[in-house]
Length: 307
Image (cartoon, rainbow, N blue to C red; front, side, top):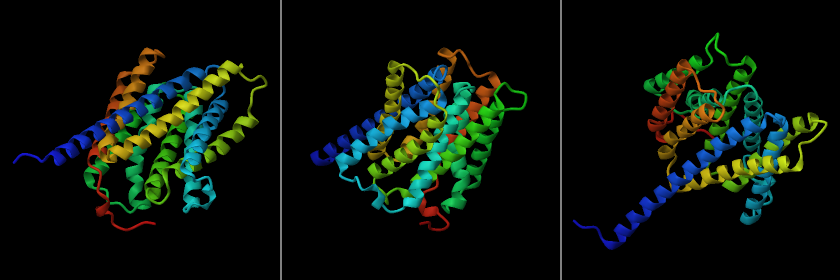
């Protein structure tokens, strides 16, 4: 039976929307990977606290423009303020630890440790979200953590402090993602974005003001790192636009494209390729995370409800 013109148009529209969403998602991942590489490069001359401060100055400016456009400037009247605050604090800790770790950590290995966050999210979801996690999912989580151990193996060349900071960053990002899932549908995207930006600005601004260098970088450098921060803010907007067009279950496995980009950038830009054992660990994290993304338990299988 042939399709009616209306159904054919609807199908074409759905396919085009999906392609747009995937394209926007890849653009966001490339922006994130480029910003991480940019930070790694700039940290040779700019202190990590100042990098974070300029990032969230730019992101907060974008947030204010979005709130103004949406007519939702009274963000203190939003529901779930406690969880919004904790969510912002979690991401602020992520930013602080990630930036500090990048000073000494190779980009590929640092990003790989950070990408254990989805594994941690699955491990924490039974306790925090009441979601059922099957045996094969637990095996994937353990395999991913084994991959992380291959990267940070005893006797390896990774700095201990940087490694610990990246693990803290991954744990906090997992908490950030879990809170995002709890708040979805309860708080608008503009308000959630603004709360996160402003909390991160305060959290990263305090150490930046306390640790400002005696001589600030020249204004072209300041403008450059502000532009880099704006790039990371735009990447977040691209992610939101992608998720409005394509389901999270479709996009989640594509996240590991950013990890692949980090390996390539670390190898060809910074000339710090991971060794064979670390590459095996990175591969295990990618495969485990991809499997979990493709076999996520539907919400209907949750063992208990959550507020």
